[in-house]
Amino acid sequence: MCALLLLAAASLVLNEVLYDPPGSDTGFEFVELFNPDPATVSLAGARLVFINGADPSSRRVVWEAGPGTTLASEAYFLVGETQVPGADAEAALRLQNGPDALILEIDGVSVDAVAWGDLPGLGEGVPAADVASTSLGRVPDGHDTGDNASDWVGLAVPTPGRANARADAFEPLDVQVDPVWSFREGWRTASIAAIAVGFADSQRAHIDWLLNGAPTGDRVGLVVARGDTLRVENNLWIPPGRSWLAAIVHTDDAADSLRVPLSVGPAPVMLNEVMARPASGEPEWIELVREEETADLLGWSVSDRSLTPRALQTETLQSSHWVVVSAQPTAMTQVVDAPVVGTVGGWPALNNSAPADDSVVDWVVLYDERGAIADLMTYDEALIAVEGRSIERGSIFEGSLPQWFASPGAPTPGAANLAATASTSPTSAGPLTATPNPFTPDSDGIDDVLHVVLRAQIPLGW
Image 1: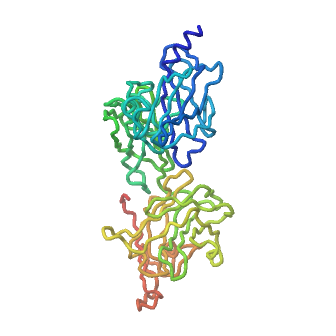
Image 2 (image 1 turned 180 degrees about the vertical axis):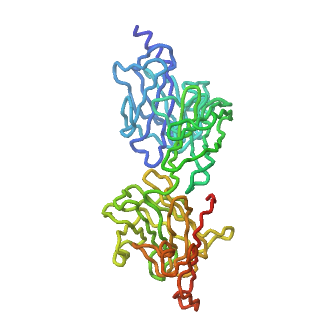
Image 3 (image 1 turned 180 degrees about the horizontal axis):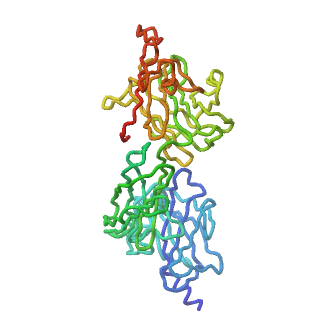
């Protein structure tokens, strides 16, 4: 029995090598062995020998199998450094980034070898490509023609201790929804992008869409070439409230999915006032209004048009109807009678002029704790025409669309907006209001902007 096991061990192959992990190599390198034989094999006498390409005559044994070690049929044996999860054996590999080579020996006899980079003669046939920040692997597992360049490829994602690739396999890249946010329920276009990473020349999959766990839309089948990126669209009716949209890519033997959070309609926390063009020496700020004064803002964030979320610093946030987010929270605290918080990782600087090809100057985006866009406003140059004047949200009522106005007076961080209260002012006359009264456009910076509000229910989409 022992003789049979030792003979079978000669069919062992090197199957995957990570010699140049992303970032620091120390602790993350690994070598994977694979047993393509139909029987369990003994690893007695097996060892890994590293060859430094700078000195091809050098030999360094980086691992030797312990006594009694075996490997089942179609199984993997993972030799990894200290930070490699699930390793079957730990070793200080200290592999280099090429050109180099690795040899698998059993009882001193070479049974497999791989060289990477410009290092002919030390592996099998033509050396494999020298890759960075990912692993080299046989595709499919155990595939051995005796030529490293043909058998080994850079893997899209390292796969220590599991299959390097399937015939049909897709790596989801992203799920997007257009428009990215809507205040009203309605039709939106969702799309998923995925790359074919299997080893078949032509790869098949189908895509299912789930909204809050329930199937929506027809199943979509597709066939793409290896390495190609696909994008599949689906038109979906998104209801009011908070929801999750998932796209699942199915193959015959696996399923991969991505999901995106959505928020439609008034959220428990909303944008209320924005200072995008402050007076000289003063900071930008964004005022939020909470439906409940104790609404939790942990995990919420804001961004500009770049859609790079900046988390709110909410460690000491107390109860309040209004919350002011500022680029300079300490300074704002001295002048605002409401909680003031900063952002983590910098401030989403708000532009003061529109790009040449667009009338929109910038966006202000509010994300909930799931990463869904809970609220969004855009502004043009007319809304920031006067330095030191804020942009205010008008009254929010059932069925209304977002309404934003240039403030008719001084900014009101931590207090009710002038725009929201204009319809109840003494100068109100039915659905049409004008503020200030009197209007004195004499360029002195006082009452130079006329604020006109027309209250009307107009069934428009946004």
